[in-house]
Every structure is written in structure tokens, then in C-alpha cells.
Amino acid sequence: MFWGAYMKFVLISPKNRTVYNFRGELVQELINEGYEVIVTGPNNEDVSRIEDLGAKFELIPLNKNGINVVSDLKYILSLFKLFRREKPDVTLGYTIKPVIYGSIAAKLAGVKNVNSMITGAGYVFTAKSFKAKILKSLTSLLYYIGFKSSNTVIFQNRDDLSEFITRNLVNERKTRLVNGSGVNMNRFTPTTKPDQITFFMLSRVMYSKGVMEYLEAAKKVNCKYSNVKFMLLGAVEDLQDSLSKEELEPYINDGIIDYYGETNDVTKYFNESSVFVLPSYREGTPRTVLEAMAMKRPVITTDAPGCKETVVDGVNGFIVPVRNSDAVADKMEWFISNQEQIDIMGEESYKLCYEKFDVEKVNREMLKHLGIKSEV
Image (cartoon, rainbow, N blue to C red; front, side, top):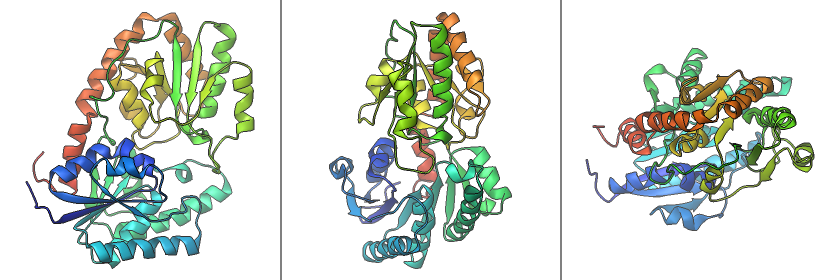
């Protein structure tokens, strides 16, 4: 269905990098459907990469961390002004503040088709501290208000969907389910694995991502096997849940891991890996795992929402308990002792990825849920 050149779609984003890395194909699908796509972002980093997708960029400053009443009100007001000026037909926000404040602003501005996407419940739903519990209560209240303003709320795994319904945060009639953000299987393609068995984790360096479990597992395995390599790729950020550089340095200095910061080309590191590891506490559907699967890598991940959907235990990898470095180490050692299984399980990863997570299939579902296409 083609809606004409004057339909407008606003994508409310928390970070520019996530637009071209995770939503690029969706943006292009929307443009193919005849939409003018406007992307909001918190700064001017890599704007050209967003514009290369065919979208327009609108700077809307955003304080992503914590709750600051003044800056959050400014964010809502800026979005409201944008919506009143551009009069979009459809909006979609993802991550906490774009979902909550984007939905409220869109509703106040009279947007008829307001959509939210939960790409993971996030740190506040996994942390155990008293402060985190207070933040969870406040965030839940804000979600409830934001979802009241949304026409559709799209989830990336069934556990999150069920929890949000059970907690009465969202009306079940508004909810939809997709298999994550999908992965471009033409970009992430199978490659030859290295001669040296290499475990790889790609993630922001945060406790809730399971980085400490990965580091401790690597340390245990490294003591037994000197010919095994461990890679960690991801940024150390100034967030409450982040490991500090000081906490990471002993593992680097002792030669346990090879650490790399952020990069615009993750395929290079997947190429150098044998097995992908993500011991996360909770995800939406982890894009990094999908990328590994598309490149025929077996996966070690946790029995956590979002993660467990990506692995059939014992078929394309292993599912281990959350917060259990010993279990991660055990599965690493299994791969070391059964190296012939790496290629076999990698093939199964690829098959599962194609069946469930190919971005073309996921985006067809997205367009249906957004009310843009009636057929899939």
C-alpha cells in the first residue's frame, strides 16, 4: 500500500548510533512506503549517516540518565513543538524517555497514530538496590502515563509483554509482539572462523549486561587453557550500572581479555570470533546475538527475558543461569573440548536467525503493527 509523498513519520530516538545501526532498514522501508521520515536525536553526532538513509534529522536535546524535571519538561516541550510544526501522521519512540515523553507530547500535539516500542525493560527492572526499587516505581508510573497516550505498544519478547500487562502498566489490547529489531542478513554474513578458539562479547560495559560474569568466566578458563582468546568490545560509560575503567583494567593488564572500545564496524570482531557470549540479566531481543547468529556463530547466553528466545539449548548454543560465571565458564570449556561442534551449532544459529530474525520479516511485522501495511 502506498500512502503518498506527504505522509510524515517521526522516529523518536535516544541516540543517533541506534538509528543507523538498529533502525536503518526500518527507516528505508518507511521511505519506500512513501513517508517522509524525520528522526530526532540528542546531539549532532553522525547526522550524515542518518541523512544517508534518506531521513531528515531534528536535534532534540535529551538527558538520558536519571530524572531531571526541568530537562525532561524541556524535552517534552521540544517534541511537542516539533509535532505541532510537522504534523506527523505516525510517531514511534523507543527506550524509556522517548517512549514516555514522546507519546505524551505526540498525544498533546494531536498526532493520531502514536506508537511505542519496548526494546528491553532495562536496568531499573533488574537492579536490586533500594534506589533502583524507587526508580522502578517512578518509571512504572511514567510508563503507565505514557502508554495511555500510545495507540500501540510493541514488545520484543513475550516476558516483557506479560510483565507489563500483569503490572497493569499497559492495556493488553494495545500490545503487539515482534522478534526484536531483526538483523540484516545481507550485511552480516557467514565467515570462516579463526584457528584459535576465541570467545567474544559485544556490549556496553555494564553489570546488567553480564560483563562481570564474562570477565570472571574468562579468568577461570584462562587459568586452564593458554591457547584460548577472549575479546570484549564496548564502551565504558558514566552510568550507574557501568563498570569503571579501574574495575576493567586488571583483566586487561593480566592478559585475560583483549579489550576494544566502540567501533562502527563490528563485523571485523565477529570475524575473529568462534563463539559469542552474552550473559545479560535482561534484554529486549539482543541485536548482538542476532548478528552473531547471522554470521554462523554459536551462542552462550542466559535464561533471561529476551536472551533465551535466541538459543535452542544444546542446538545452536547454550542457555545458562543469570549471574553465574561458573556456568558460563563450563560452557566455554565444553566448546574447547568439543571444537567440532562450533561449526555444527553455528549452522543451526544461521537457520534459526533466518527463520525468526531476518530484518525483512521483522520489518513487515512492524509496518503492520504501525498501521502502515495491512498485509505481511
